[in-house]
Length: 348
Image (cartoon, rainbow, N blue to C red; front, side, top):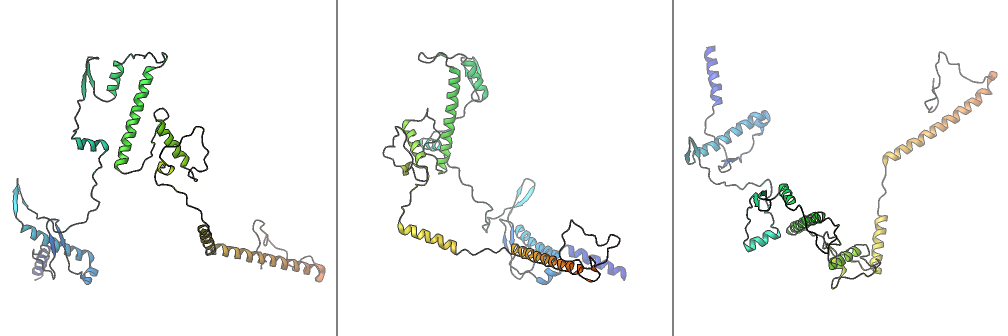
């Protein structure tokens, strides 16, 4: 009989591993095959949950997944190569995005012009045949610069130019300046596309800037003070920008001095006084306790010093005329440690 019971128990345990595919719930679960998602509206069983959390969650997950698999098997299927796949329907629920939608990149000024005029970007060949050098040279890159240097090995000096002037250095400087101007234009286009305010004058030197741009830059620098340029001294032969005021020339928000009036001044002073008088004093408890402890310590020390002086005087005028009224310490007992401060009187 024991063998029969063992076999039955083993069979029962094996059957518990393979549960039936039918799942019964009080409320029907909401299935979304498009997202492969199940929403279970039923309440938790608190007793089972507190008794064994892991087992309860495992059983609940198994039932919900079984419902989802049952619904997937009911969908239409098709054969893809050697596999049978189910056609998922469109999703029913709108899931929130983890991040915001990507914003399209703003067009630069040249891209807007090219789009309006229908100009398309052409791909250039990596190498071009140079008739002067009689060989193929790269279209761009440092090898292209070396080819130009090899081709322009001699430069003509103009008639009105200084014969001692280095024309190669001048050509190099012009090339660097041209690259810098193109970079400034590129950055301005990016700032304009992103609606970022930039300086009106930009990065201009005295050689490349015009007279009007220099006057504008001087007026902006003059007005960039606390007094908006009222108390700035005028330079010799200084000119004012025609038809443009200081406020229009200044970058960013228009600056304006507030008019000073008696009622406004009075109101401002009253606000300052109220702000100062209504402040509550800050109490530092730790500092107050430390001060009180220090005062108590000094009082104890002074009281101990007075008592010691009285006893000393009393011992000198007592019976026998002895200088001290206590026994001599034995074996080094009662020695005073001068490194430590005595607080009060020693008791024996």
